[in-house]
Length: 124
Image 1 (cartoon, rainbow, N blue to C red):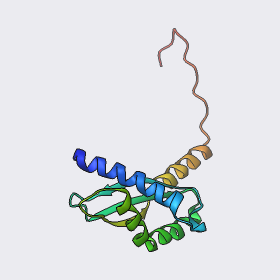
Image 2 (cartoon, rainbow, N blue to C red):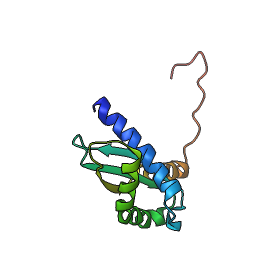
Image 3 (tube, one colour):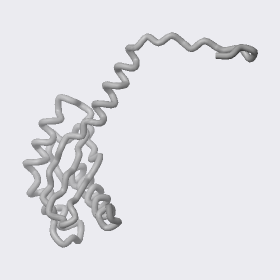
């Protein structure tokens, strides 16, 4: 990825976080929400934003609210950054946090006996 796109992704992520946390007054977005990844296309027409929500039940609701607020978010983003054009934003669910929690839960349920210690004179 080019340095220009990396800077754009970073700046867009910072601005979107500020818009969602401080400028949007929707109580449905008061949940613990984070933007984990932002990928803008090289022509700056489209932007995919991965959203992670701590509560699994609220994921669909939060992404729907964000997608319905795209017009407002784009207007606020245009005020904050100087880009050739403000991209169309697509919010998608980042399932990596849920997958990591599930793997951790599975590992906790495994009953693995502790390893036996090997004495210095013996070969394993």
